[in-house]
Image (cartoon, rainbow, N blue to C red; front, side, top):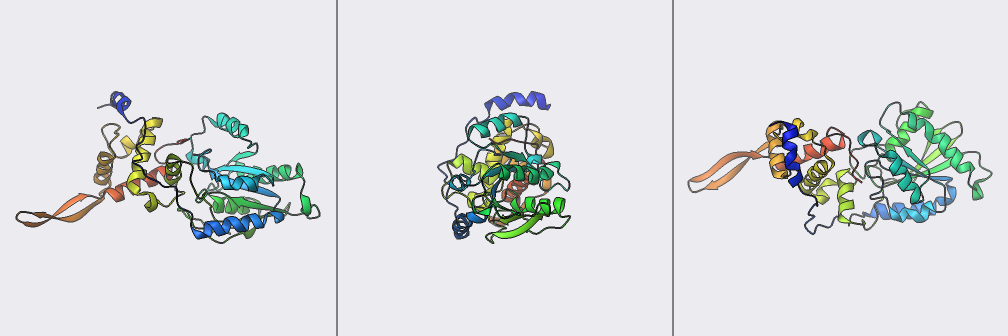
Length: 319
């Protein structure tokens, strides 16, 4: 069946996702609470706050607890991972953020070896700082910035990219593909020589209560919450729902499906067959135990989610 013919059935797909009473709003480890407290206590050393968030969810999941921090220092919102986001509505996003009081916004791809947007960050920060009073830091000629954000949005990658661009030096912060890699609080790292500029790297901090289950699911899908806390199966199902809702059907060709599907069990079965992700289990029958080969749905769900996070299922905007 040709894809354009198969798309007719998409009208029958889910228009609302059933969260089944799930609650993913309680993930606030001790190091997060400790980190937030130390961040507040060190504000007097800071000239500007750099808040980093995932460009695919520019409005969802930003930590409201940061707001009181942002109110007392100049603020730059960096929407990272723009290479994974559908930015066709970029101007609308900027207008909505400005309406919410966020005027200084920069889109970046911090994993790219040469990203022109990274080069804009230092001049942009200097201009923001010079237009605001520096309080007790007037006598200092160097700048100190604090990097904040929820987990796994690319804070460490941005710091390493700034060092690579401005100092021609390698990584200073450990980078990982899952939340919680940075646990040290307020590590001071130089990222520029002219002017002298240091960043205080901080661990990712989620709000103690996420505003809604759907917001939590978007955060989970983008890798901000550890997969096993939510469940790979439910994240994969929400991903399928989101791709269908957005009209992103590249998964059909990638996994050799005949047409788009709204059935996550069917999709995961096809993925497991396509990638050879199966497992042998014992089945009890009337004539004794029999070993059978069945799809490994967890492994298939993991591959589906990982493909999305690497941008292999197309560029998306979840908000």
